[in-house]
Amino acid sequence: MPAATHITIPSHDGQSFDGYLALPPKGTGPGLILIQEIWGVNEHIRSVADQYALDGYVVLAPDIFWRQKPGVDLQYTEADTKLAYQYMTNLDFPNTVLDLQAAAQTLRGRAEVSGKVASVGYCMGGRLSYALAATGAVDGAVCFYGGGIQNNLGLAPAIAVPMLFHYAELDDHIPPTAVAAVQAAFAGNPQAQFHVYPGVGHGFNCWGRPMYNQRAAALARGRTLQWLAEKLG
Image 1 (cartoon, rainbow, N blue to C red):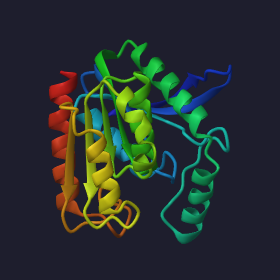
Image 2: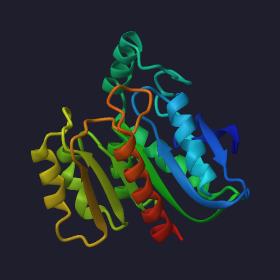
Image 3: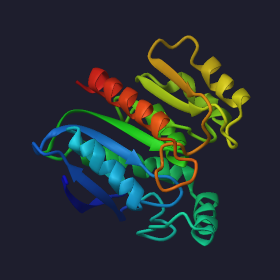
Image 4: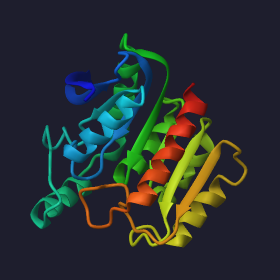
């Protein structure tokens, strides 16, 4: 397992919050901001951070819900999922993007990070990865089935960094019309790549949920690693 620890991230408004930091075996590498789903920085997200760390990245998964409750770590039960949706509904989106900018700045400032920093987000985190890219705080962004991106296309012209979008063909949260709208918004942007995975549903990357699809998850992960290697060096 990669070396992992929790670090403190200073916020823009004089507070601080937690982040899970996973280091690569060599100790240094490009940086990744890993943005959680609605269940918090839970076992699955920590394992994803560890995976990318084993691939040579310095990975920081910031606590997105800290302004509501620090340390949210939920499972995929009915009760926890209901609570997770409450946290998502009450999320202060503008402040969260500022928190992610602070996390990216903190990651860039660490001695272990050599080179560029990208973001990778899943579901709610995919939308936040997209919004973070629009701020210019990262050198590239990956969005796994980012819900709500289609409702924030006004940010698209501000994005000057490479983007990678993964979508599920049978996503019950993101219809094909939404995917088409995002594709249209980036039609003139050669730095944007899109992949749609046939026959799978929302959340196909998460091994803790029934919709997990091993083949689609492996394919999306492989494409992400290739893209990161090309864009971050």
